[in-house]
Image 1 (cartoon, rainbow over the protein chains, first blue to last red):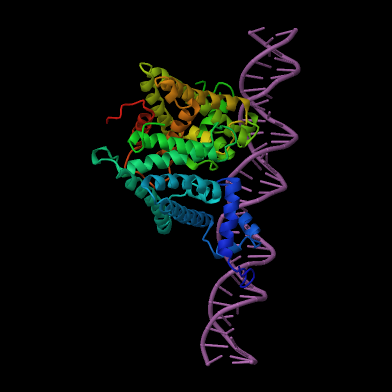
Image 2: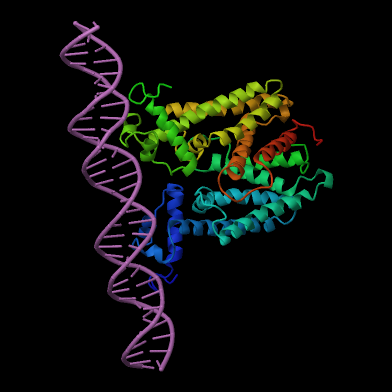
Length: 205
Length: 205
DNA sequence: TGTACATCAGTGAACGCGCGTTCACTGATGTAC
DNA sequence: TGTACATCAGTGAACGCGCGTTCACTGATGTAC
C-alpha cells in the first residue's frame, strides 16, 4: 500500500519484513543490516533512520513476534471455547502452527539470544503471550478437585516445554535427527498422555 | 599433560576446548577461529593445521559432545539399574545435568545449526545418544500390558522433547522469562505426570 | 494560489574492524645411517 | 653417539571481504504566510 507515496512509504516495516525473511533462512546471526537494506531497495545507511542499530531491529522483530503469537494463542483459546479441554488443545496446536508459519519471528523470539527484558514493550508482549498459556492451564485445571490441582504455572510450564521441545527437535531445520512421527502427532499424543496423568482425560484409550 | 613437549603438545584438543568456552559464552555464531587460536596461545593460522575450517571445528565440538552425552546417559541408565523406572528417571536428570555442565557442547550440538549428518562420525555419535533414550523408554514400557504400550519411539520423543524444552526455556541463558520452579523440579514433576498418564506410576500423589 | 522555508527520509562515499583463509617460511622434532 | 636429512606443527604477513556505522549531502514533502 502507498508503494511510492512518501520516500519509500513505510521503510521501517519493510525492513522488519526483509529481516524476518533473512533471519528465517540464515539463522539467528546470519542476517545483516546491509542485506536487509538491499532487500528493501534502499542504501545501507537508510536503516539507521529507523533503528538505532542491528539489535534494535532484532528486538522489533521479536516484539512483533510475541504480539502476533499472543494474538494467535488468544484466538485459539477463544475459538475452542466450547470446553476448557478443547480450548487447551487448540492453544497447543496454535503454538506449533505459529512456529511453522512464522519462522522468522520464531527465531527472533527464541533463538536470537536477545533478552525478553531488553525493552519494556518486548517484555510486555512476551508476558501477554505467556499469560494466555497460564490462563488456559488454569481454567482447565479447575476441572480437577482442588487437592489434585497442579500449581497453574507448573502446569503451563510443562506444556510450554513439551511444545517448545517438539518444535525445536522435530519441526525446525536441523536436517536429520528425525522422528517417525510428525510434530503434530507428537504434540497431540504427548499432551494427551500428560493430561491423562493429571486426571483430566479418561485412562482408557 | 605434556604442556610443551612437542610444539604445543596437543593443539587440536586445546583449540576444541577454547572454542567450547567461547561458544558457551557468546552463543552459536559468537565464536571465531581467531579468538580460539588466541586463547590457545597460538597464531591465527595454526588452527588450519588441524581443522579444514571453522565448520570443521564446530562439528568436532558437537561430535565430542554427543559422545560425552551418550556416555553420561548410558552411565545414568546403568546406574539406576535397580528398576527400569529408577533408571529412566536417572536418564532424565542426566539430560539436564549435561546441559548445565557442558554448555559449550550443548550449543554446538543443538544450537549451532550444523546438521547431525554432516559427518559419519557425528551421525554415529548422535545416534548412540538417541539409542540410550529409546532403550530406556523401551525397557520401561515393557512394564505395561502389550495393548497399553506406546510406540517406543514416540515415548522416547515425548520425554526428549519435554527435557529439551525445559532446558531451552528455563535452564539456559535467556535472562528473563523465568518460571517460579527450578528446571529440575519441572522435569521431575513433568515426567512424573506423563508416566502416570501412561499408567507407569500410581495415580495417587 | 504561490513563495520561502523547515523538516527529514534516503544517499553515497568512507571509516575502521575483525574475520576466515592462504602462503611462503622456519625451526623443532623424528629418523636413517 | 653423531651427522644429514625429512617431516610437519606453528609463524607472521598479507589478502579480500563484508560488516556496522557515521557523516555531510540532497532533494522530496509538509507548512506558514
